[in-house]
Length: 208
Ligand code: GAR
Picture (cartoon, rainbow, N blue to C red):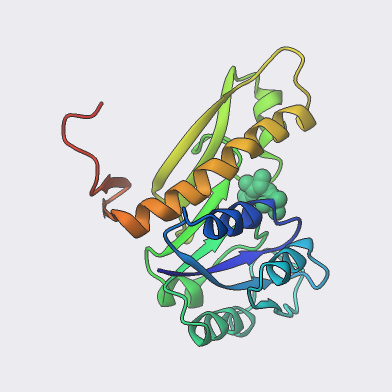
């Protein structure tokens, strides 16, 4: 299973994928890493792992890209024979070109238990709302913002003393487990989707 990873910044989730690939537990190969930001640390991480790392210039600063800009991502993903796409800290909204090229084959990692706290600053939103439990979600990407069918979630308790930084770092540790595990599960088992519900092929009827 060949995976293209789209990034915008730090790239710690990309690193979790690359580390899992290196130790043979990803069940997939990172075929290419594409960044909309020229100086993204994620690009250096990809290069260090020997994975093609490409900056894709995007004209607008807006979250929603122009279709011709988005088409560049599609072309590069196809050129590198990516079968699946992972958004790992990619701060753009995916539109028609990518969704039509990779229907139900684009994953995103988000630092909250969706549908709570979509969008930016999810951990700050969780703290301000006063929830006792938050976490992370890996989901399929659809045309909305953090709104697609849920593949995997991991929980993190919120403590009285938590700050945005402390909570983010504990959520991030769970993201680094959830994302490679989900990619592996897709590669090894697969799933089918019925509406918003995802049914994993390796999950028996009896599991609660
Ligand atoms: C991660 O926490 C990811 O879940 C979040 O940005 C961070 C990227 O970190 N993504 C979103 O909030 C998307 N809505 P990374 O670049 O170190 O992987």
